[in-house]
Length: 412
Ligand code: URP
Ligand code: ZN
Ligand code: ZN
Image (cartoon, rainbow, N blue to C red; front, side, top):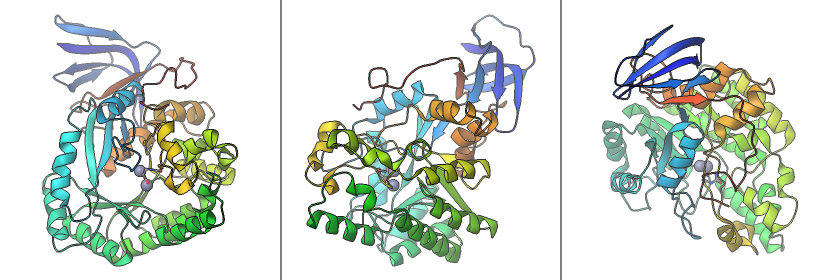
């Protein structure tokens, strides 16, 4: 059955227009000022509503393995929550064990993701450099997986050293892909974390102190330098600090292909969240940690001036009983928090309604730019004739409070 959406306001990243939309076989087949209803057509009246391209969350971790058990949203529950919040595509990660081929891990991850309700894709992580890595990168690209995620933190499990990182950049550049990177200086952070714990400083308060903004910025500077040498496009995930932004802006002004992502929690929360008892602070243990008000302001400005192109949630929730494993040692608290359901509404409420961004920018930041960077455009990221019918009808008049009582994410 076809679907006709009438009387709505279509918002793309570069235009706003009142028009009707006809959908057939999961594609947008017509957009015009007035489309008449035909037989065999479901009618949706979107008067007073915005019609936007489905949100694309370029950074989620469903069922992420962790010593405390997997992150608490499965592909099924997490994608269901995403859809409730207007996100119709999620990009998760393939993270092999060291010694395991990326291609084997990719097949396993596809099978874990088979119950996903939304569209989905993956970034693939080289977690070491072996004689097979180059070939595996080429094969992933042949199969349509063009983005490779590298960690400069978490050195003892997935993090790469400088030589491995350079090899990945050079290989991905030659194969025509993009490298995405978690920027934090893993070695220095491990040292700081151990120093705090050895002095009995074990509470979540010491999580941000052991991962200062300077150590993010050092890694950002290094990643930009290495990717410039390798001539490889670079996408820096979850940028949280003003200092990192200065390096990113410099590189972009020199013409380097460097993209940046930030997350709602860095735009809306500050490090006072780490002051208090374990129950109230452990939920905010995520990396990089939540920063200062000055960083928040710099991030909002960087959305406006285009230093930052995308927003992701880094959705990686854990239940409180998982967080409690680190009650006597903050290093053992699983890092991450939920958010896949709330990105669009948070940016709508605190971005548009607070006059920090306009409605077209909202679409650009939540959908269009991720589609362009990760090869999904124009099938996704735009409401246009011929595009996928990943259509969100957005009611701007809903007023509600985000709560564990009404959300759909599997986290407490
Ligand atoms: O704390 C976080 N962000 N956990 C998920 C893994 C990562 O670093 O993105
Ligand atoms: Zn990360
Ligand atoms: Zn992440």
